[in-house]
Length: 396
Ligand SMILES: Cc1ncc(COP(=O)(O)O)c(C=O)c1O
Picture 1 (tube, rainbow, N blue to C red):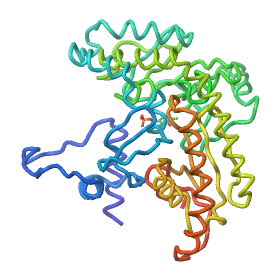
Picture 2 (cartoon, rainbow, N blue to C red; picture 1 turned 180 degrees about the horizontal axis):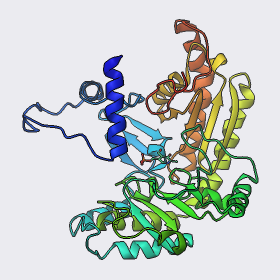
Picture 3 (cartoon, rainbow, N blue to C red; picture 1 turned 135 degrees about the horizontal axis):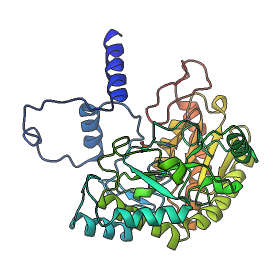
Picture 4 (cartoon, rainbow, N blue to C red; picture 1 turned 60 degrees about the horizontal axis):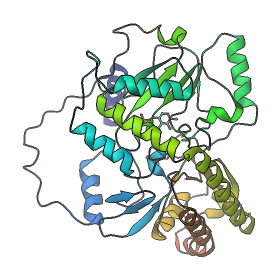
């Protein structure tokens, strides 16, 4: 217990100081590596033995990806319904983004902003004009600390895809304007076409003072994030006040330009809107068939969730259902409680989307009754507030 507390103290200290722990390495990196493990099972065990257990993954090893498809080391194909928490809106290994990555990687990767480079200004102009803001602060971490205001997600992702009531965003805008508070939209997960609009705030035609973008800005390839604002806000930051070593790198800028071009050229916002309607229509049909199991199907665009009734699943859990989905070739992950998030790449085909919806139906019809019968009934069915990433119970 004491050591757990000390570790937490150290982690908090590292977090607040923004530094990394220094790790002394006494063996050369390759000394301990035997022949590379090939099977999914070996790789899962290797990670379990040598990496911190800060996530609670579905046991599938990604080895190769293209568009919405993923293959494991054994060559089995799956459809991705998570998209790396919406970082892969454009689909895995999009050829245009890969080309930009490789070409820039062979030319120049990093200048630091102690100097200029020939990609970042082009990216800065493109991004600010696309979203109608004066300036951008490039980052490789995502939140500015110097600006006070109302920071919110227009659609909450990790909380379980929570859609605010109609008029909420407009009310926030009005209140922020009235009391002179900065309205800061975290569009890291909801933005860049995920919700069926370029920004989730576009659903109510609301213009925040600051927008934070990340994830799909790097096309699922490298971390790129950015803060957009007008000059009155952005010019409050003076040289030396907010640095980012990799922010504005030529590699990040080239990848981000290609990632945005793909979203525009392939009309991914419109696609997300239409495909989302179809996905929810199919899922609601399943809900009608299983009203005692499915509490709600909700979403905007391809940002969707199915909320299940924990008691009806007991002793099975949403995580168990995701394992069954995986066995049927569909990759999804529960968010808090008994909610399964369905957020495929926006480039997914209609047939693939239907495959996902059918698998969800089949899991409820065929797998769940077996799970309920076979899994030992220990404890009580309880409303859990589990962390999506690590599976830990969040509130006691
Ligand atoms: C809304 C939102 N903001 C910020 C983050 C943090 O992003 P990162 O892990 O890339 O720093 C996430 C990650 O899921 C997110 O969903």
